[in-house]
Image (cartoon, rainbow, N blue to C red):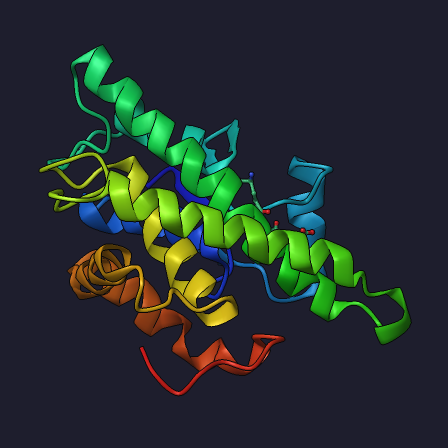
Length: 217
Ligand SMILES: N[C@@H](CCC(=O)N[C@@H](CS)C(=O)NCC(=O)O)C(=O)O
């Protein structure tokens, strides 16, 4: 086995890649980022110390979306996360970017703000982030109508990100009843075995959620 994933089970970005790995039953070594030694190993590979990070022998691959694309190119499995047709693949990438920038980013902003000492918190950026989440939910409510998965009939890269990002976004800024399509999509995602596995593996860490994890999901 050559693949090694530096990751933490509670991290949404790590779950995004784990879901793609689980969908394809791809063998890999999980390098748990839980102490100074593992973080130093990560830092030696990638000074920005963002995770997950994948190594494949001597090769280092960064960024969740490109890790998933890399897996498909170099370690393909039965469940492609990007369609072969380049035009269909573009639609998937557009949605993947949407979930990264307009769901995950504002959600993380609220969480990281909460992790700061009280005097360093920035309430304006939290209001803006929550506003962006509301707008994103509203856009999704229309975009997802009539679809099973983000880009249509097949589970793709876009759903790998949507699953953990909407999971935590709902904890951070509830997806209200005015967004029934988005809520139903989130429920469908959580029932998918690869997603369920990632969520279950992260259960022991729920106390780490700085806003307080709700007693559900
Ligand atoms: N754009 C990156 C985001 C990665 C990211 O922000 N990961 C978080 C964990 S969910 C992280 O590295 N946090 C540590 C930090 O911000 O220092 C990707 O898609 O891989």
